[in-house]
Length: 112
Image 1 (spheres, rainbow, N blue to C red):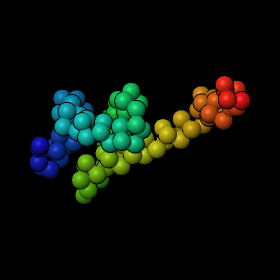
Image 2 (spheres, rainbow, N blue to C red):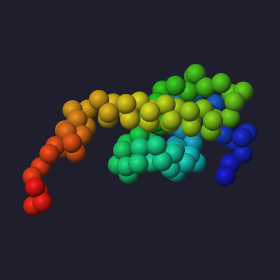
Image 3 (cartoon, rainbow, N blue to C red):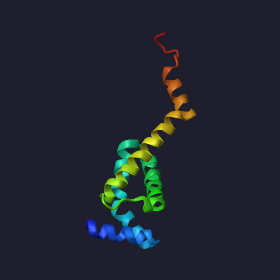
Image 4 (spheres, rainbow, N blue to C red):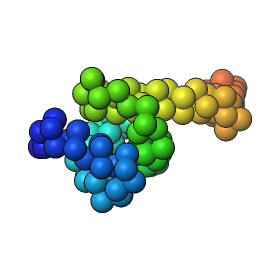
């Protein structure tokens, strides 16, 4: 586990387009982001995809990070928001409706 000072240093270097510094941030936080995404999405592949998308968003938004707050707090908030957006998108998916329709469909059984 790295210190807050080291994280701050990596963030500043990342803001200056140092990809190696950002790779170190990813290595430090990717497991925690994945676990959070998996808890929210309950699907391994969705959580893996979301982990990648979160770090892309973080890379593109580093200039918006407020260093008065812990980086991990900001990272977790971004992860939660992106997972919630994904869950909403999945609920609106036509594939979701097909599954719901199948659950409520009356199918003849041996008893009836």
